[in-house]
Length: 477
Image (cartoon, rainbow, N blue to C red; front, side):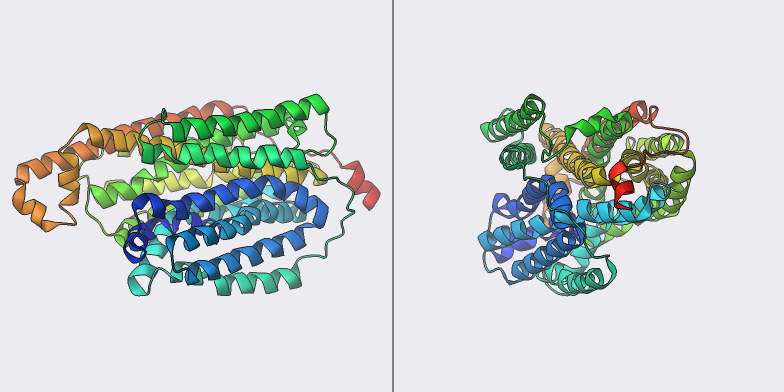
């Protein structure tokens, strides 16, 4: 639910503009507000899981998310909708790291790969199927249902969690790092706000982008400096985890992969919508081979990661993604759909063997009391990197379109047939070709960025993992 809601709202933007009489900049806050709330609350998840217990925190996150969804559906203005999206994001931001902590602890080090493969299905398929679900619900019902659908699922998950999850047994001994929270959470939110503003501003040099991003980075830097200067016993995010070389390599690999994958993922539906003139629903369905490919390899990759380590699997996965994305560097306005769908399927096969084995590599060697902090760190990394990737590729595409005035009339002719009557057919064909070339250039950047991920992937372990026995856990037994 939480991952779907990052992307499902993207297809509702034109509907929000019409129903609330709002500008594109105002409706964009329904996405930005949710992302910023996620970034603010994720750093707190590790401490709160240790302090209050994972079951209580998970149920609180579900409650906030479902309540936020109900309020979003009842919103009567764009301001109300944005505010309720922030509340929804506070719950959604905790669901993934806390859920990951619960599953990793339950699995034990020998089965983390298989468990992460299960968890990886929504993480990879959410961005692909979010637009399909959103487009379908808006077509057959109304925009309210993209939020109302979360309520019965949220209630069912609450009841199930209450009955199935083991009772929390926590010793509330850790002090809350309040100063760390005041530095890190606003720092991440400000940095992501600056980065998220790049597509709208069209340049990195605007005050809105540069000012907020620099202030955000300064707060994050202050958090790091304070951590090492004070040698804190219970910091909000434990940077001592980077002493574990496997976690460090995994964080670097995850950062590069999330920038490349989540950034380039923005381009695939846009190509089908703008250059091929497909509907939102059709564009979403055309991406289905990517999801099918990921579902084929993900369970196998999970089992193999537990047996032989993630190194070889991740390298093979990245190679498949590079091969699939390379096809899109040559796209035109009439490229064969059979070729493109085949390339998406190959990319999906690679995706299933990449992101979750990287996360598994980070979490397999952590002790039980480190897992909550480790999963929180990986989720922060993914969120920040995904936002950077989305901004980079949005700007690449927007700037390429701005450089050629023939593109906008050509792509607008799909929605407005009167343009086709006013503009010569040859001019429209030339505009669509220029637009396809712009997509091809952006995919070249994406292919190179994915290929760069091979460097940290080479340092991932290539044998069955081992994990130190946690003395605290032994004493508990």
